[in-house]
Image (cartoon, rainbow, N blue to C red; front, side, top):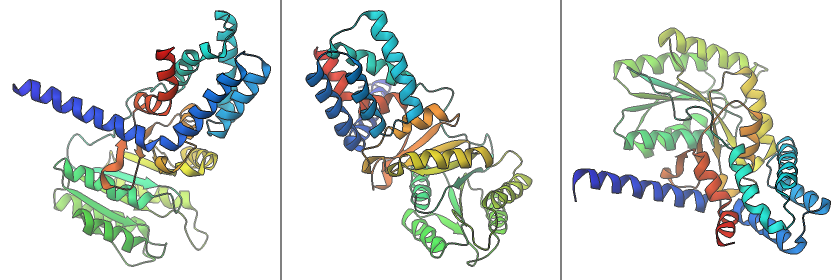
Amino acid sequence: MSFFQKLKQSITNKTESVTTMFKEGLTKTRDAFVEKVEDLILRRKKIDEEFYEELEEILISADVGVNTVMKLMDELRAEVKKQKIEDAADLRPVLSEKLIGLMDTRGDVSLQMAAAGVTVILFVGVNGVGKTTTIGKLAYRFKQQGKKVMMAAGDTFRAGAIEQLDIWGQRVGVEVIKHQSGSDPAAVMYDAIQAAKTRQVDVLLCDTAGRLQNNTNLMEELNKICRVIRREVPEAPHEVLLVLDATTGQNALQQAKLFGDKSGVTGLVLTKLDSTAKGGIAIAIRQEMNIPVKLVGLGEKMSDLQDFDSEQFIHALFAGLMTEEREG
């Protein structure tokens, strides 16, 4: 086998592995959604107002989002009328096509990296969404790519946050720059950037507090951190990633709106997609925010943090419907 054949096979194997990971990670959502839609199609047979109402409820229960569902239902009604579709089973390919359209990726969703010097990635989000775990997993991934990585413990307010990041640093084999609990987070970032420059680090991953004590405004604190970072590395942070817990459904969308409006978020990370039957929240976020989902958590292993691919997502989530339509 030639070098190029081996390379092609390696890429194919990796693609198949990612596809499998998406399918396994979205099992709960897929089973809940596809099972209900198939039951509706088999039970109702005809497309009437009751059919539309039930389909609407199924989509909303998967946390696709009310606004998005309303838009989708209008498009489905128009397509049914245009194509003169009467049999509910014939709606499968139309529904699949419309859902893919809703997830259409606009622009580059890969992580932005510095052309030279250190890449600074800032993580924001409320407590309990898996922010520190995401940082640890991303550090592991960058290390696997041969990059020199460092982490900054900027959450100096939550008890145990520094220790938690330190544990991840030990697991992954990455240095963690930290101060004492209660220290100024911006000072931690300053020291981390200086250390990253001195040690010729490729990627600096920065944690921040999800909730601040003594009535300090979270957004003001984040702005201060960003100012310090930009002063030392003018084009940084290269990414501000908002971490959201997919299991919280519509609450995740509200958090995205809150942070997105005020903190310069450039991308979203959806964690715990494997733990929820409400994975449709990714569609709602895609429709209602101009911020791309860049990474998704699909399991507990360190390698389970994956780049978000809208086509892989739709294929994995609605594979049952697509299989039925091909067989039909």
